Image 1 (cartoon, helix red, strand yellow):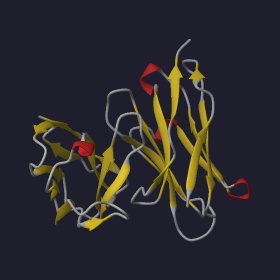
Image 2 (cartoon, one colour):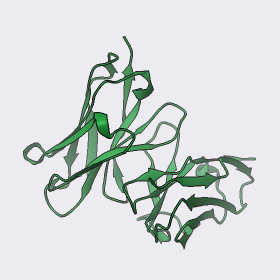
Image 3 (cartoon, chains in turn blue, orange):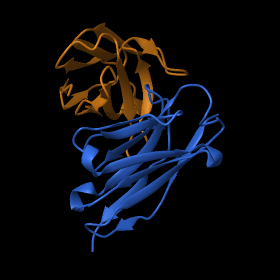
Length: 116
Length: 106
């Protein structure tokens, strides 16, 4: 069974960079051809796709966030990561990682609050 | 960008009712459309993939149809445990989610 787990700071100051890691177990992040995604959800609102990275390192980002987002993969640690720069309160959300084009496996989500 | 317009934004129905949610894409996305169920405090769960295929272990009362720009998601016999928010998601060009439909029991 594939398991994904998000980790990282729960509080980030405005203008700083949000950094999260998703650790994958039960599957090899470098085998097959899967996309590894980041999605976020502000409290009481809908889902917003942030971007993805393939097992070969190809990235795609949401046009609305592209200028601030970097997604990397570390196959040796079976992890992929999210960096979101110049954050504001509007970036406060639960951040999820998920596998695939149809997101059949998700992490439990981690709340990141942007506040001074 | 492909926009996904989901309706209604909320609905209230009785146990045993048939519930239908629609999702319209701003351009042709073939059948690259998935449906998710999200319960409060939980990650979304894949119910339907590629417009009409039932996800693993998903009860058969859930179904999906459509192609091109117009898609429908249905719950044939609403159960109390189906109270949740449902989202459509296209992946023909990058990824976009619909705005969600909150389903409640009347």
